[in-house]
Image 1 (spheres, one colour):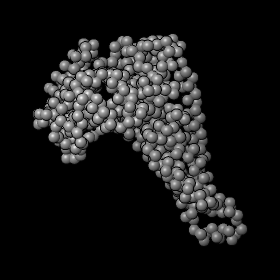
Image 2 (spheres, one colour):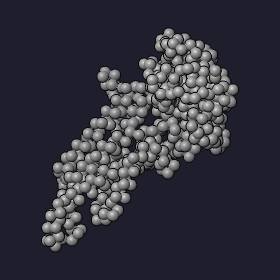
Image 3 (cartoon, one colour):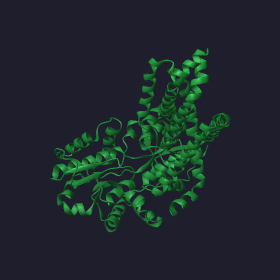
Image 4 (cartoon, helix red, strand yellow):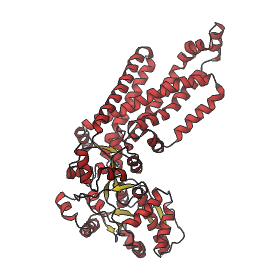
Length: 521
């Protein structure tokens, strides 16, 4: 609790800004949904043949996974607030439509017949009888849409839209409960406040409708003004896309910005969306991985880390010692790929998964065959002798499948898979707790993100890949009873990535050159 309070105090300015961004996203999308959904809902009550189709279509939109919908929208709207508002608008439509139809159709037939008997037209019946009686149901739908929108708006952080999801996703990546709560609690409070305001409006609609409308207009105008100011300021500044985890790592953005004296606008994004964003020039550069297949497939270029900020990230199986001791043949099986995978080969394998969309299982099996290694039939599921985990990107999926195939082929052990576990700390904590038995990890990540070594140790080790490996191997064994097996052979470093077109236009091959071009403007 003390840690949470301290974090909230230290980051109060950021949290207030994120709360405002979250509020603007929610209210603007909700206002658009009401402006579209209410008339459409009233219209289909007069055209019953279209009601099933319209409600069904809105229901289908509601079933599309939020992140998938945002991914579909980026090529059309770009990154930032725009795709988030469109997605929230689409998600808010169904409850507003459904409750509008339910409210109007729920008005007593006798009441409507009496109104017609008094000489009212259909429009007069709707305006003077049905709509007033349906208002509680309509407002209930708007309240439901509001709460849903506040929750979904956290995903805007994954596409550079800001909001309270920024700390939520950083915390998830780093398994930092304090950081997760710092974003989740204000979001929950915002949902409660907005629901309470709508509840008061439901009771005092006439007196609060105009002030509420003025507030919505003010928020929209403020948001547009803020976007215009930001657009002018960002025109000559470098825009860098980065995954949430990178913003808080010991080898992450703060240290990179200090080493290179970076002045840039950082757009936090989901790792899977970053490459399309830089390819479409939505951002100028991204923080990618040097072996990612999308670099060659999408005509991108990893710039040289000329100030040697990033440590070597040689990959190896990180395994619980008790498992190795219990199964003597496990080490032998996993070591069969030691030193066999260079960076070029790993990049090609990644490209097959990321660009050609081939399944990781097939890529792993064909790789092993190309190395003269056998692949046996799968023996997977619970209960298992060995549980293999992975983080949430293609390279990890491929390596986890390679490890699984080796265990199944060269040992009698039964394997279970828990892949796509998220950030580094999620995998590492699962390993420490025995929820998984091994996963692919990187030596630089072990040194900086897990051991979090002091700066003097970091500066002493980073220039020597073998010393980094020896250090993490010794420390992990002593502190955690975990063992690093022999590295596979390649180093997957972080890298500043730009398009080939950008690199050639600016004449840059290093990170320093890129920054110099933008800082000179």
